[in-house]
Length: 164
Image 1: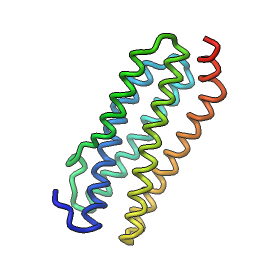
Image 2: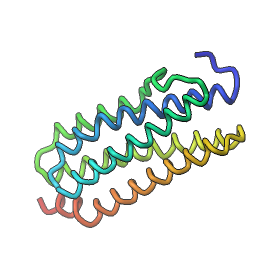
Image 3: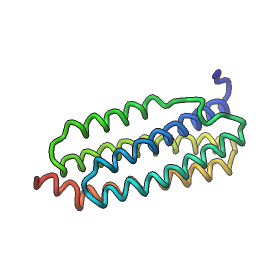
Image 4: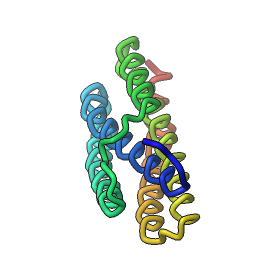
């Protein structure tokens, strides 16, 4: 795809985000299966449902712009997901694995936060207020998930990893 305008760049960003959400949606069940802490497993399951809704939102926006939601594969997300799975396979001990899963999940969340922030800002510059509102909603959901993971790490997961 040739990018000749800010609108083209915006659509490409949305396509990358759609790829991010597809990859995360596929990865979260594996992360949940690796988690031993029930609250962490539950958090991953809840976030998968949220991720599927965010993916639907992106597909809807892309359809309105006449663009394919599957035109791009986000290679950065591929690498982050691969690192998550590699790290989890190297760790011994349930507490340590759960701590690593949260650390990896937060890297994924921070990547999403950056991507949604960028896309929402571009939508604003292009005066696409409906898109901006939808993207901002997903951005806030990602921030909320990150905060929940931080709290879980601080209060339960990381103390258990230290004790093990």
